[in-house]
Length: 548
Image (cartoon, one colour):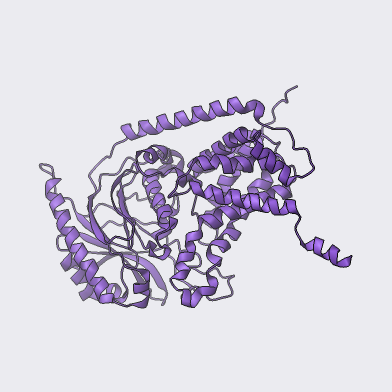
């Protein structure tokens, strides 16, 4: 008998196992809406059933567990591609393979658990679900402050569907930012999904499975189904009309941007780490740059209007584009050779590691003048946790030498004969509202990155959607050079000007348009989605008379 008591104490009950499996599954299912799949209807199912579960519980602890499990499933599945970075050095870090995605999911799960628990302070129904949507967005925004920031997979990125449909859907980001899109999408998915699903056999089965022997509570939203669906439809129609008006009424202003030569060397990360053929890699970039500059010079002639000056040419090499950072930092002759191959270019923007005066490594981007002199240096400010930056509480040495030193933040370069440019390195581009110097707005953005670490997975596609959203939020054209892809250029409306797909070696020569007028979000930043969330929370707390 004592053995049975001990066993029953540590063996979860059937309903507990079902509770865990269902919530983990719903969280994982929601990731199908993220890039590159963009399965938006799946959010009605996953968030609809989560909303139903939250609506049928009055226990804040149970709601917190529901949110934590949903969040763990969402982030574990959505960040699966982090494992690729460990596999590149599997001989050294094989033991760390399970930790990147599962560890991040464990850290991020409380950002869903807390909104779920807090939402139970309000009555079940529209008010509880609306409060959860607002709190989800607020805690999602709060991920900016976790370590050095980790805002991957904001649900607003689901709307960045490739092509004209996505271009229409993401236009409101110019007013409310990516987090405003997240708020709208989560609210819509929760309210519509719950009203549609709460009387279905699937919802009743889940209720019976999670609460065996108990009579499920009556539906909370069935009497409001028509009203919820009509209001949601009206909201979507307004969204589409406003987005369409912006597409057709907002136009570039001022002088056009430069002609950008975007170089994609397609160098496997194993070659760079092993320093197998640094000279061959260097020569590959030189040859591609010369080819691209020649094509850009042809564009200079064909796109020049009468009386107009020749547009400047700027070439971009990716983040840590080739092994041998000392060539850029310490070898004037190497820099001169680069610019000699790029004869005709007004500037070169090259990603390279460098060592500062204190002996710390920095992930940097360097601007070269036509004579090979270093005209400007920008150091990456947002370092990747566990990749470039090691949180101090980690007892094991994961990041070599404890990580890199961070730069001061967004800058605007004023290079000779080149329109003002804002440099961004790698995943700095995922931080909505923090990519531009607020006091010195650039005319275009240059993003250099190396997504080779994450293989041909969802990671580079999710990164790409962030690039597109930043272009719309700020109303600025952006050129992106990625080592193995996806290299791309967007205008300020998020329209793709040209691209080079994953795993291809090549070069793009793209004439960037002029920037759009400053956007509302570009002026006010994150204060807009913050105000929208607080406003929605305030509305949920207003008492209203109960129906007799």
